[in-house]
Each structure stands twice: as structure tokens, then as C-alpha cells.
Image (tube, rainbow, N blue to C red; front, side):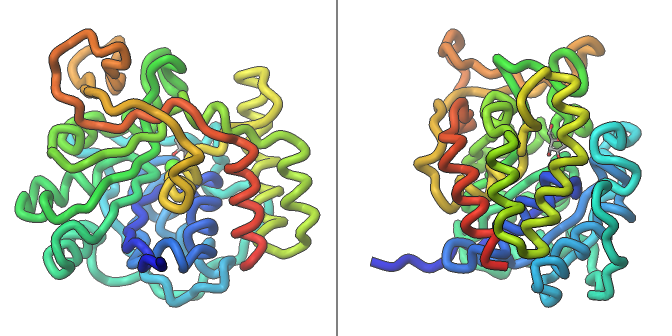
Length: 315
Ligand code: BDR
Ligand code: CA
């Protein structure tokens, strides 16, 4: 039996790992139909994330992809960025050409609202690879679209792995905790790829050599991007490579069996200075709070990298 590809909107702040996730999605039309890419401020400011999204679409040979620009700052806090990881452009590493494909004129939040209203209920999945600002703003502005979302699959949060931007918070949730709170309270089915998973998806030398061996430009770029950002992570974690966070979201849509987790309650801390942006995950079921997210905890990392190499080598 063949099933039709799942319709997705990729909401993102590229970022090298976001870029790899976009390549994976654009290389997998039998599994996902990318309706659009919506950029948000996060790893770097918005004028760079929207440009980087277009650079990646052109690299994939898909300049017809719709790219929209969204919110330039979190709902109620100043933007925190991560140039210390991703470099000044967000896509540091290889020199990339300026994109020539157009940026859509409509604001990303308006696009998300209009698309969810136009599509049949439960047929569009939101893949969120950055702070949740665009999604929460859409939900606040148009509460009628919430029930139309099929699922939100997001990279964000951490529990046993605690934090990467503060001792207790993961970057995407920390940057806009109010937005995360709105989304986690929305009632939309959520699948989370927290650091607990992504820290097992490491860019070891053999895995990156496999990309280089393909010999195509997109695969070379993946290898060069990981060469750039893994320096930071190897030094920080003492690991054998860097976590390739965001592609876990797209890989889940293609091969969910690569991941394992628990359906549990996750609440977002928004008031404590010390633990702002923490994803308080009731992994052991010690409260009677209602489960609201599938919190992934494990990944078949070899299977994940095999999928990435196989699919991106098609581009
Ligand atoms: C997340 O933060 C960003 O730096 C990455 O792109 C990823 O989405 C990891 O904490
Ligand atoms: Ca990201």
C-alpha cells in the first residue's frame, strides 16, 4: 500500500543542522511534501535565517520552494543568538553564494494561519527546528487553526541531558519560553526531539567520511558544515563529534522506528531566573499531569546517519 507524502511546513533558524534537516526533507518527496519553509530568529537574526533557508533550497536544486520570513524576536524577551556555535552567518564553514531565489512577501505567521485554514483539518504537520515564536504567534492570533494541525514535531528541550545554553535549558526553548509554553499547552499532538536524543546522533569521523565519499556538492557541504560546528561541540562535550540535532525531526517523519520515547507531561519553566526555559519532563510519571508530548529518549544513530547519507546523496 502506498501512502501519500505528509504535508509539512518547516519552521527554522538555519543553522548548519537546520540546513541538513532541510536537505533531508527536500530529498524525500515520497515521504514529505514541503509546503513551505518559514524562517524565525534564533541561531542568528532573522535577516540571516531567511537568507540561509534560501541558500539551502538552492543548494538542494529546489529554488521553487516557498520561503517566508517570520518573527524577528521572541514574544516578550530580547533575542538570544548562538554565533558561538554556528558562526557569524549561521552557516559558517564553506563559502556559500548569495541566494537569487525570491523571499515570499507574506509574513510567515500569516502564511501559517492561511495554510492551516485552507487545508483539511489534521493534514499539515509543523516541523519546528528553532524557537517556537512563529508557531505560538499564529496560535495566539488565530486560535481556530490550532485544531487543524496534524502534529508538531520539534527539536527542543532536554531532561536527563539538562541544558546546552544554560545548565538547565536547551537553546530553542530557552530563547522563547513563553512561545514554548503556549505550544505545549495547545493540545496539539507533540513529538519532541530533546538533547537526550540528539546527543546520541553524533557526527563521528566515519559518518562524515561517508558524506564526503558521495562526492556531490550537497554532501560536501554537509561534511564542511559539520567540520565547522563540531569543533565547538567536541571541545564542550569531549565527544567524538557534534550532535546533529534538527535532522532528527525530519528523520522521524520518514522512519519513526529509528526513535524511542515516552508519552509524558512536559511543562515549560517561564518564571525562574535560574531554570528559565527548562522542559520539566515527568519521565517517571510522578505527577498526575496529563501527558502532552512524546518525549524521545533514544535513536538508532547508525540507522539515522545511513538515512541521511542515502537521501541527501540524491540531490
Ligand atoms: C538547537 O539549537 C540550535 O543551535 C540548533 O540549530 C538546534 O535547533 C540545539 O539546541
Ligand atoms: Ca535550529
